[in-house]
Image (tube, rainbow, N blue to C red; front, side, top):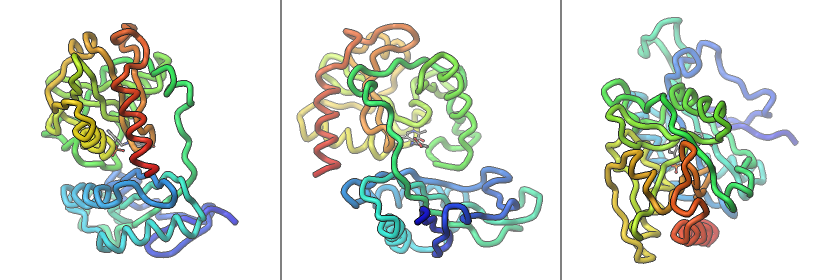
Length: 285
Ligand code: PXG
């Protein structure tokens, strides 16, 4: 049986899961999304993902036609129908089909789409030996242009940064904010360890407040690792002992090189290893 895709409460074969070319999600990137993971058939931090999705929608004046509870139930149903246990879930809400003009009032029927599929993970080698990343010249959205806290369908500057990374032979790239401070990577949050203290940029540094990021901050607290949400510059990264990234897809992945410079010893650090293990236990527990 072909993969079943949810659109507005109905399921369609992957080949037949289609929406209008007049949808403002396509025409203007006018919509919001979430990327989630399920482990042993249970969505990790479902409530947090629902809260972030509905807040992103609220921020762009998009009214999601179903309740959070219904949405969560529909996510579970999509997993179930597809017999998926450990999966990646992409949830999309578009503004809906409208006229060829920006006016969101001339659209109707936001489209709610749920895709649950098997996950394509980063190669295991990166988890063992760590990533090399570069700093992209493309910055995160200026907060006065579009809040970087909105997980919108407009990901072009992150994609441009990703292209910069790929052209340099790196699968992730660091993005700074409009003040030149460290924000995050194109689809992952960033952490460093310095003198036994875990540090990550604060919510207002132009980041998406990652759900994995918050889980790592919780785990640090539980394991007695001092943690700070604090402004970081590239200098702080260059002199850090350890560095790692977090995201729903990547989970926790070490970084051992930035812009051609080794971080700390140039190999995966002990705090990073400890948190990688703790995260595995958390999601599989
Ligand atoms: N920053 C950005 C800009 C993101 O898009 C994260 C951080 C990590 O957040 P979570 O909540 O996942 O810990 C994200 C989300 C993909 C993919 O297919 C991943 C994200 C976004 C879009 C696509 O790998 N990560």
